[in-house]
Length: 74
Image (cartoon, helix red, strand yellow):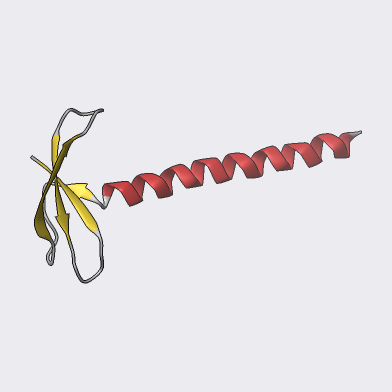
């Protein structure tokens, strides 16, 4: 009976580790794509939007070499 609790406890622990790890990876990936300093090689586009959570205007910058987009807060 004790091995059943250990088996399911291990699965719950693994799922929790995956959830917490994915949260930190997602957050880091998003933070890298917006801010106030535009990285080198990015060019301003005519595209702009308002972030619904922070109500800040975001202007889109594009890097033609990599295809990446960067969102600058204004």
